[in-house]
Length: 414
Image (cartoon, rainbow, N blue to C red; front, side, top):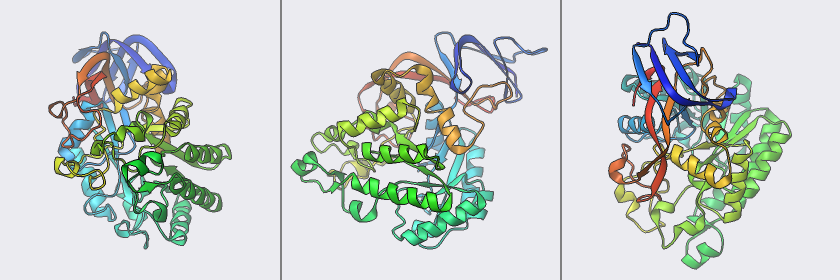
């Protein structure tokens, strides 16, 4: 592995308060120095990053890998060096062998790091507990139901008690099954006018209230995924202020879009949870701006045939790995958030959720690095994406922020 010097770039390391133009020195897969070359350092390779930002590699807290080769290529093209993979694959990640195979396949491909979430229950059916200890040994970083509910509250209590005993984290998407099972869009005037079955905000808040009480009772570390409402954010923030071991993230599309973006039944604007009101979007934006929440792509590659359907039949989700950075920059500009703070939400904040030392460029840290041009614009077209999923409400738009180089463990992978 050759030594690398990244010259002339604006190094932004939010976790350590670094923001200056300097050289970054990489040796043996780790950061060896910033500004001044370490003694005896000889660069085997040089990257000129003039006009570019050099930051920690992005950490995505939610990306589905329907085609692992293509999606990991999409990840590094988007500056993402670590992807957390939900367990709702086919088959679900409920056996250690499946998780082990996924991690090793990721290592073979040699692009972004793969961090699987193990299934909390067998088959994600919300009934019997999966083999959590074995899954953890196989490389699972936490346990989740993805978007599948645990309808039986007693089963969820027992799962959280078990997880707390062994120090495992549980990731839950808060959505009450009974209030959301038939819904398609946010329950409100727009859904009524379009004749779409609604999912009320109460579906999120009732679930959060239940989870928070179970956290109080068990001490289980819980991460809430993809919050969508102002009321949900308020409940989560109150629990964090109470000192409970709770965190939450927001999908990047929910920071920029509202239910009005459904327009005339645009299937690319169907998400789970649904896009909600402008007031909800503003509350999500405020939470991210305040540093209370991490931002993730919620990358869900969907085949063209599954989107070329009526709104109610189209599969929810959008491609996200390659637009996480430009959409985060777009949100930050609109919200008046500094570049360093915006990058923190997709580097050091997700690392904190994972309890990881990654997401930084301190000397000695693993050299996962993203080099991007913050001024470069590019048009989002199907041809521009490496992901198999071309589904995006931003199709045809010009986005600002283009990745030039991505390094994982000191290797140039893009």
